[in-house]
Amino acid sequence: MTNKGTEDVMIYRDLGSTGEKVSLIGIGGWHLGLKYVTEKTALRIVDEALARGVTFFDNCWDYNEGESEKRLGKALKGKRERVFLMTKIDGRTKKLAARQIDESLRRLKTDRIDLIQHHEILRFEDPHRIFDEKEGAQLAMLEAQKAGKLRFIGFTGHKDPQIHLHFLETAESYGHRIDTVQLPVNVMDAHYRSFSKLVVPELNKRKMGVLAMKSMANGIILRSKTATPVECLQYAMSQPVSVVIAGIDNL
Image (cartoon, rainbow, N blue to C red; front, side, top):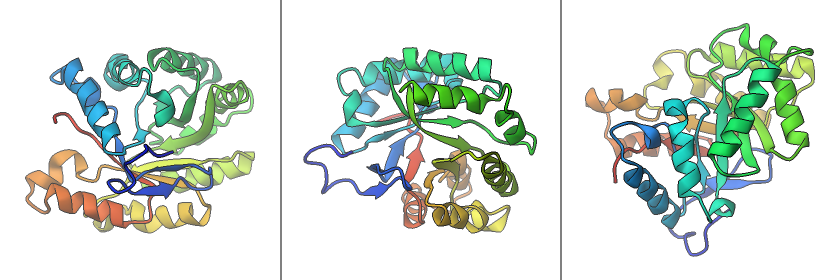
């Protein structure tokens, strides 16, 4: 999914085995809805990104009490088919997950979201709650997928690579296919609970889309003077990932 005339500006990579290609840089949704970021600025950021060949847009049901999704929905009016749209839900039960999926569809002003991810898998019990065969959130995801409301399913987390591996194993034990995983990838990752060493190779082996985030550790790496913003992005982009999601709050 590329924008005409932008192939010389942006690099595109396969999103695992989904059959989709996405821009190597993606726009993070959290920053678009921050209180100090005006709606005008948020919409301009999306327009500028589209003009430079960005096709991957991240968001989440609970970002800034829904403001991030609302702004992105407004920004993509008339441009929806030019992008690969992703959002996340944090409901762990079927009922709550179904409600959040429908709310995200309304806010984003679309009848189909390309990818929805189970958000913030931080505890070892999370996957068992999600895959509960009577009332788990995965049931709502599958029903929405069957109804055409979403295309692909993934999960996110940024606490412990062992929890990511546990989620993958649990999903397989329940017979569920996971298309993408979102996780931290940055220059400091190798030194502590390394997602790049422990999880990324497993995702590549399974041909899953690898969504890199926290390339600058929310600015902590920059404030430490360890690396520049360009170095942080170049490092993350040099890894075997599908997209590097970057939060942007000004032009």
